[in-house]
Image (cartoon, rainbow, N blue to C red; front, side, top):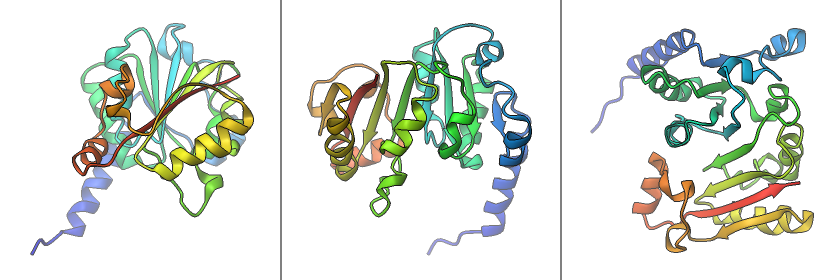
Length: 228
């Protein structure tokens, strides 16, 4: 029998929350702060990064595995991971600071509020990697029209959106109920990514959970489309 010490787990989480406050590239802004002053780097991310390189977002980034990997492979782009879980973001923020990765930042917020952090045309690309498929709440899916309308506020016209998921339900929903009716420009789609021969960053990077899904024999689906 495995005994889990909940007090130790709580201490670890509190320690991570405290360390999060020391990371210069991890931003945590309350709703009240947004209402009162807005976000200081909205429309000025180029000033934060010190360059005008394209910005790539990972939404629901968890521990930031994809954000870190993309940043390592694409040093001429700035990468921002977004998640609501501070204990998860700690890992990505700590790694990026230890490796002195100047092209990485993390944002702790609900994705429902994501348009409060970026100005029009400020983001060039979006990755959505293994989000909660929300089987009972389609409107909460990160590829629902509700969220795509938010992305239009800041994603450059024609900017690509990537979806990787092990959920066939989310894949089918995105293809059949969102993308096709709205006539989005689909560049790639496969119900079995690693059997498709697809190359590029979609197959070059695997998250921890993705590796687990593959070991279990679950196919990984992938869609790349553009919002015009």
